[in-house]
Amino acid sequence: MSLLDDMKEAVQTIARSAWNKRQGQVVPDPEDLRLGNDAVEFDLATVLYADLQGSTNMVDTENWQLSAEVYKAFLHCAATIIRAEGGKITSYDGDRVMGIWVGSRQTTPAAIAALKINYAVQKIVNPALKQQYPEWGGEVKQVVGIDTSPIRAARTGVRGGNDIVWVGRAANYAAKLTDLNLAERTWITDEAFARLHDEAKFGGDPKQLMWKRYRWSKHGDRIIHGSTWHWAI
Image 1 (cartoon, helix red, strand yellow):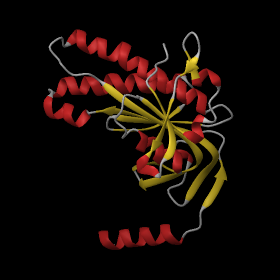
Image 2 (cartoon, one colour):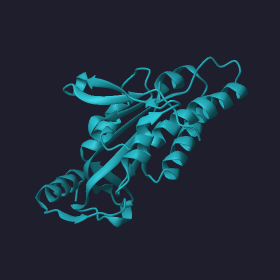
Image 3 (cartoon, rainbow, N blue to C red):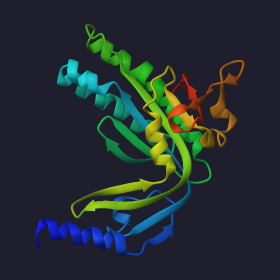
């Protein structure tokens, strides 16, 4: 069979095949799903995307060793925090990492993870790199996006090279929120914000709201909330 015929047949099979769906209790690994139209459904899941800001300019202007160390340091800290807060790391994509929380307590630990990532970048990553490269005039910055919605997991790709695709608003909006370039380092949709416990809403002494309300003009003026705060580790 030619390459063209192989792809035509594969696409026709995908489009025609019925979906096998089942309710999920834990975040699946790729091996838990078939490559065919097989999906795990979650009534509600919280997705976090942590993205390194300005990485394209960094690789254009800095030596590759420094750029690689920035990637490694940022992703190590972000992934470690996601796991420590009960999230499942589902993918790395260049300079970003995606984590998912499911279960009865999901949005609050995701928000705490985001605030801890901000702490790690400010108090761990940047000081270490500045100490090693005192002549470096740059700064590591990150943006984290969070959303909560129903979501489905399906396996995509080819045999020997595949992964899970997450289909649902939370995955898309969490990723899109990382495009915002304001003072706030953490962004959360209003739907996710409404599910936060007070511990992730208020901080300081005396307690004050850690989030500022915005309208997301690129997405129909949806209400979102941004925070400049960090959570000490």
